[in-house]
Structure formats: structure tokens, C-alpha cells
Image (cartoon, rainbow, N blue to C red; front, side):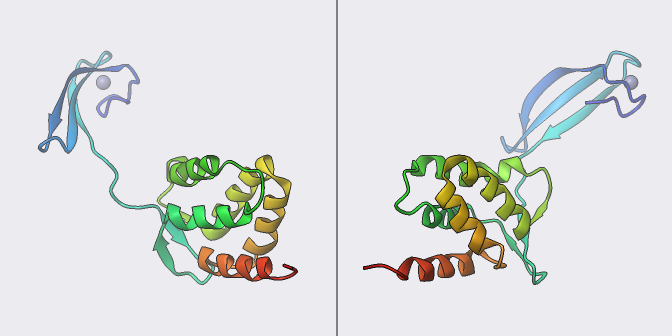
Length: 150
Ligand SMILES: [Zn+2]
């Protein structure tokens, strides 16, 4: 972290302790260039990743919804569900922004599925692009799954 006084990159932590009853970490830092000390607090980010739908409506990102969509796309395909779970539950950590569009989620999911299974990728891609929510995508996948079954 750069020094807030002189902008130097050469700062080091001189003390680190729990703060706010363990909900934060307080760090005392010292700048090697100007010698001044400053304090930083590290705390968990409690605001969820927001998803912006095409309609403009926002909702909190829900990894379970994403996982359901992925599982449906991979139905009867030789894909380890654990890999889908890892993708869905670590998804939020990959996004370095407070919000993301449904299109961007779909693109990332498609890129992921493309590496895993071509059929799952095509199922997901052909349907997801048309919809503004994972719920509607799931409905559509279920509808498609019902056709042509013996
Ligand atoms: Zn400094």
C-alpha cells in the first residue's frame, strides 16, 4: 500500500492486531521514504455482488442460481458437478467490481463450459443469450429437455 502522505510504495506493516471485536484487522504501517505512520483496517466486504439485468433491475448475485443453470446445461453429460460448484461458488471472487451484467455472467459461464463440454456449452449459449435471468433460462432449458424425449 502506498504512503498517503508522500505516495511512496515503500511502506511496511509495523503492527497488526484484531480490531472491532475480531471483525477487522488494524494495521499500523510505516513509510520508509518519509517515516510517517498511518493505520489501515481490513474488513470483510459485506455488500453482495449486484447483478444488473437487461430490464435494468438489480439483484444480489446468487451462486445457487448460477449453479442450477450450469447443472441443467450439463445434464446427462460427463461433467463432474464439483467443477460446476467450484465455478459457481468462486464466481463472486473473480469479479473485481460491485456489479456485473447478466450478459457478462453468461459470457463467463459460456467460456467455462466451452472448456468442459461442447454440448453443455451449446445448450447454455443457445438459451442464455435470450434471457435476462437465470430463472427464465432454467425454464427454457427444462422445456427443451422435455422435447424429443421417448
Ligand atoms: Zn511517505
